[in-house]
Length: 311
Ligand code: PAY
Ligand code: ZN
Image (tube, rainbow, N blue to C red; front, side, top):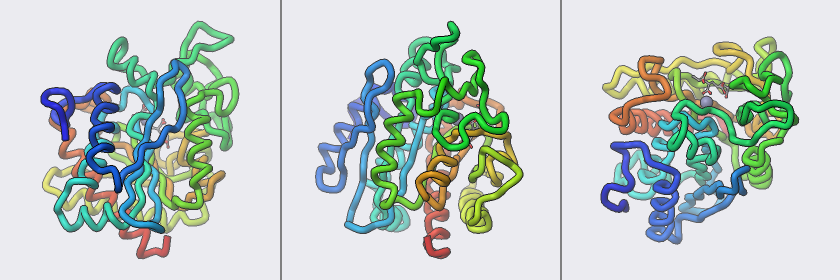
């Protein structure tokens, strides 16, 4: 389901291309899919999502993608997953797709994403101006109302890449995400936030490395299942895992901490996709398919482990 030359996984697509493709997919699978709108961005763009549901009462999985503008591999992977869930004839994929309800937002930071395509490929933040500075944008992954700005896990300087914003939920994109997720929180027990790069699975907490979540052992088992599955593919890709603040750095007000602490989502992960730094954010498109395959087999194993552990 793609128009020639306009959408595919051998290149990175623009927001307009992603949304046009989403419309085709929604039209082609009207019974199984449902369009949803998170809300409007600061610049007035619609933040769209797709729900995929083959039967009622499936456990829900929420996928947040491209909250950081320059992390293009995330929306490329998210759209490929949507396509696989709807079109694959592989038994593993069919089981995975049909045994969960999927809520997938391929591009959360729509303004930033468009900006990376048109002006500055390395832009990370939102595009809302500041009242106290000429610097633009807030780090949306520091803007959630959960331990906001604590422990040095975000900056109060509007020029910093990890600026937490003037207050929690100052960014309309993040407020919209919070409103939507809190409305369906009883239907989801797994939230995955797609990022790049570093090949890491990061569990809560981001706001402190001194404490660990109550089900940390389970979270680590689930991460190991993802990592082992990725290593079963012939690409040689290795993922490390641990708590976000424990193995990376303090990040307060991030999606996963908010989902875990404030919404009761028991399995919340930031997944840092390829690579480990050779290309970083500017990952060549030839990596899209192998990265997406790794994500698929990894997520399948992660969700199997969740089920085994009773989630
Ligand atoms: O979600 O646990 C989290 C926070 C960790 C990420 C963040 O800073 O928001 C890690 C970085 C990211 O994907 O944005 C890593 C990349 C390589 C970066 O920009 O430093
Ligand atoms: Zn990121």
